[in-house]
Image (cartoon, rainbow, N blue to C red; front, side):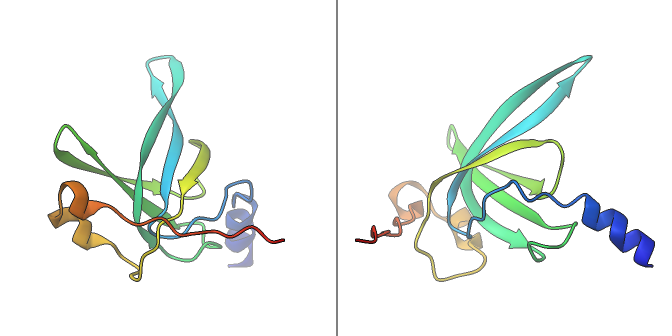
Amino acid sequence: MNLLKSIEDSQLRTDLPKFPVGATVRVNYRIKEGNKERIQAFEGVVIRKHCGANNNKATFTVRKVVQGYGVERIFPLHSPRIAGIDVLKIGRVRRAKLYYLRQRQGKAARIPEKLRFAKS
């Protein structure tokens, strides 16, 4: 059992930023098409995080609206396919899962930005 745990721990990524639910992120994901590989950006709001940050099976779901249709994508947090995650803004939310955004459209689906004060 310790062998399996040590192999999983060796594959955990530490270079990714920490981001809460409600943050707007841009996930740069490596996509393989034929024998070529390219990076595709997926930008949206994090509506859920599953498992802890130290777990090898941790995932997060990002939601965006494209031409009036909601698109959600689930990313494994410690995947080697993720080239990078950029945190664009952090939203002020009071829930751990933002599934209610699925029923909202337009301005009602906006999340207010969390104010960050600079230390003097």
